[in-house]
Length: 52
Image (cartoon, rainbow, N blue to C red; front, top):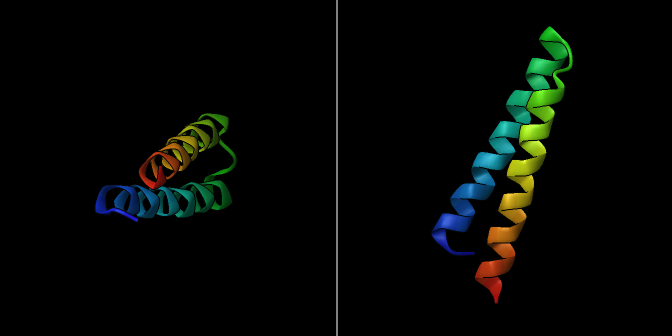
């Protein structure tokens, strides 16, 4: 996996950890989960684009 796709993947996983921690401590936030899903889709798209 190229450097930029790897960095995006690491950032996405870190964002998942942060959103989960926020949900546990402060309660669920639909907006945060929506943003994380969009970030995850962008990450998947970048990884797939780099492999082709």
